[in-house]
Image 1 (tube, one colour):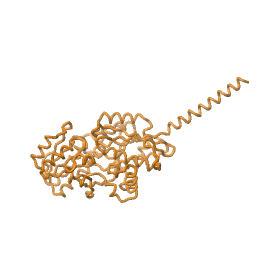
Image 2 (cartoon, helix red, strand yellow):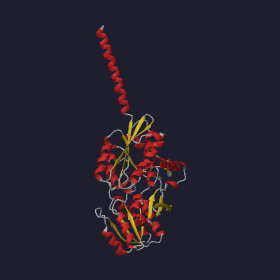
Image 3 (cartoon, one colour):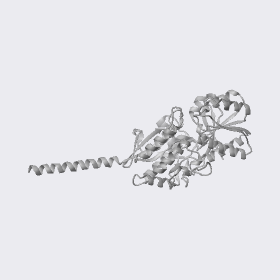
Length: 406
C-alpha cells in the first residue's frame, strides 16, 4: 500500500513539474524583441529618432502613461525594445560597435526587427549581416541611394544582399532627391559660385556628388569640392580655401559630428557675407546651440516635412503625444522614427507566429500605408514611395520650415 502511494506521489510530482516547465517554456517563447540602433550621444538626432519609435510602440499597445520603457505588450506577446548606441561621446558612429550590435542581434532568435542605424555608412556594415540571417532591417533616416538602388557606386547595392533577397527597408526619401532639390533651391536663390565640402563619409560624399552634378547641369559654377579630414577639428585648410575662392555659397553635406561647428563659426568670423547651405544630417539642435548667432540664416534641405506642417489626424495626435511624453516638440527625425516603428509593428501584428521570413514578406508587400506623412508603401527596392523634400532656414535659434521643394 505504501509503495502504491509513493508511486502515485512520484507520478503526481512528475505531472506537476511537466506542467510547470510547459508554462515556463511557453512564456519564454512569448517574447519578441526589436533592436533599435542609433548614435545616442553628442548629437540629438539619435535620441529624437528613438523617442519617435517609443511613441509608436506606446500608441500601438494602448498602455497609457503606465507603460514601462523597456517592455510593451501586444496580444499574447511581450515586445521588448532594446536601444543600442553605436556611437562615441561625440556622436560619431563606430564600425566596430555597429558590427558587435548587429551580430548580437542576429544571434538572438527572439529579435524579429533591426531598426536602424541612422547613418548610411553604418548600414553598409549591418545590412549584409541581417541579410544572411534573414532578419528584417528598417531604417528611419538612411538616405544614401546606393543602399537600395544601382548606379551610384560600384557594386552597390548588390554587395549588401549576399542572399539575393531584399530584407532592408527605409521610410524616408533618398539623397537622389535631396541633392537635386538642393541644387534647384540654390539656383532659385540666385547663387552662382559654390564651394562644396563633405564630411568624408558615404552619406556626405554621395549627397555632395549628387548636388554637384545637378548644380553643374543648372549652370552654376562649382569652385571646388573637398572632403574634410576626420582628424582635423580646426579645418584650417578648408577655411583658407574659403578665403581664397570667395564663394557666394558654401554647401556642406554630412553630419554635425565632424568639424562643422568650427567651419560655420570661422566663415561667420570672416565677415565676407557668404551664405551656408547644409543637409538634413546637420539639422540638429546641437548645431545651433554650439554656433549661436553664427547659424542665423543657415539654409537646410531635409527629407520629409515638419510634423506641425502635416495636415492629418495621425500627425496631430503624434505631435500631442510626443510633447506630453517628453516636454518638447517632435522633429522630422522623430517622425521618421515613429514611421519606422509603425511599419515594424504592422508587420509583426499581421503574422500568425514569430517568424523572421514572415516579417520580411509583410514588409515587402506593404502598400497604401496610412502614416504620418500620408499614404505610402515600399517599392521592390525597399524604398518608400514618399518624395517630400523641404527647405528650412535657421531663424532666431530655430529651424524654420520655408517650403516644399519641387
